[in-house]
Amino acid sequence: MAAQFGLRLRKGAATTALAAATVAALAASQAPGVTTDSAGRQTAGAPSPDMTTRADDTASGNSQYYTDLPPLDSPTPTTGPGGTSGTTGGSESGIPATVLDAYKKAEASLRESKPGCNLPWQLLAAIGKVESGQARGGRVDAEGTTIGKILGPQLNGNGFANISDTDNGAYDGDSRHDRAVGPMQFIPSTWEWAARDGNDDGAKDPNNIYDAALAAGNYLCRFDWDLSNSANLRSAILSYNNSTEYYNTVMSWLEHYRKGTHEIPDGTGSLPETPSGGNSTGTGTGNSNSGGGNGKGNGNGGSTPSPKPTPPKGNKPPTNEPGGGTTPPPPTTPPPSTPATPTDTVHHLENAGPSNLTAMAGDTFTGKLVARTETKAGKAVAKVRVRFSVIGDTDTAFAGGEKFATIITDSTGKATAPALVAGEKTGAVTIRATVVGRSVAALDHKVTVTARQADALARTGTTALTCVPNGEFAEQVEVKATYRGEIADKVAVKATLIKSLLDVTENDKGPYFKGADGKPVRTLALETDAGGLLKLPKLFSDDATGTFLLRVETEGGATLTLELKVEAPAETAEPTEPVTPSPSES
Image 1 (spheres, rainbow, N blue to C red):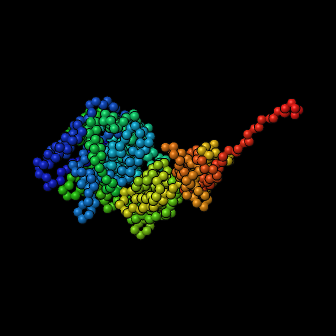
Image 2: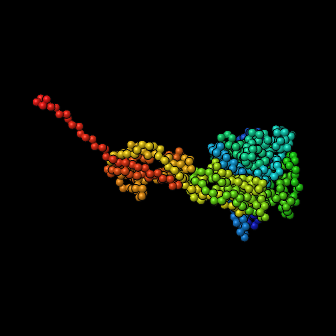
Image 3: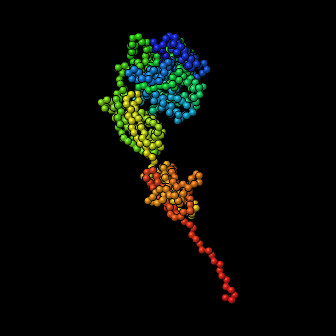
């Protein structure tokens, strides 16, 4: 099943000539084989003649998909009359929040596990659009599982592939023939090995958009294809459904989403209208309007069919959808009888955890941020997705380096963010909590990152630090920094040769370090290593003698003062020659 949204020119928006020219221009910009029909809709070309993949070797079994193409309008969000929010591309260009989150999470996962694949989330969005209309407009629950199963037509050879049952009906409820299942339309035999757990709940469910999106991403990357290469990209898409029309349709949506899209609330996405006819070999037209198939599918359409809605006057009645025989797709806006989801009842977010958290750079914050979803009356709302986002130019992140985390609220309405690790950039950091699939005011948490500190310094050696005038100290000074008894790594250290304990300004004589130019330097800015250790550069002396002081201090107030002695070598008496007595004296 593939979703493709029909292109309609707005009535009165242009003259007939202008409309025709616009459609022709867009058709020319699409993938090869895309044309327009008499109604101004774009249609794609014939299935691929160069692929010999069997239906049961593809992700969807070459099952039915949607052939509607993107709207002519720009997908860029706009503001409507009176300040109301809207988009020039309507809900066709928007992607339901949870579905969009799943695509982006899958892309991030593949970037780690298969970086050479270069999978863009927009490709998953394009396939999700073509396969199920973005999970039927985002009709998913808080965990990302579709509300009601999305099932393709029975693959019994009647207009589609002939694939006998492989799962005893476990996924598709059909013990005679297989059907494509879920928002990404996997046939059971493919799901058996391609399945992934995308939301870390311990299950691999083809009806869950997180699981299905990650599985689709791994499927597309399975042959080490580099999807930034156009030939590899074509091969990957055709391996999902072996049809040139399917490829062209997916590419049209891919380019559309690359130009820009926006998040819309779950359950508000527009639904596709035009299913493909389908075939078992990938050699027919696959277009329900051109005789390539009857476009009706077979079977009962999955879960118990909902009553057929009465179409508004003057509108086209709903057509049969790929997801199930004669069952029409649900309306774009849920009917009044549709029960409100928990997300629908959220009115605002409240802080339910600690405030003003502080941590040193490199440390994990001891407290965790908590957001609570509440109704207007202040009642807790469970099973709602809350997204925590690290905002701004900072290297502070959640454990694992993630800048985003989506958490489902518990029975008390609380979503607890993962452990937060302070980066090296110091200062205030904003962690923003938002409700996925619901437009309510964000909740900003402020945390503070301070510089690394040490509260104690100790010299590691015990040898006296001595030197002769214009000489070199034999031993280099090494110190160890600790904080509350633990090693203090990467702590800023200042080493200064001072005048006295009472006057800690830089001395102008005595021992010194050498700068890059070889000239005397008596103040250095340094840093401890991973073990909290710091070995200072070699010390030299000028011709001044006496006892001098080296002061070492760290961020956090730890100080250590060491004595340096410069003494002239002790004078030794010249040896006297023995006097030999004369013979007369002897």
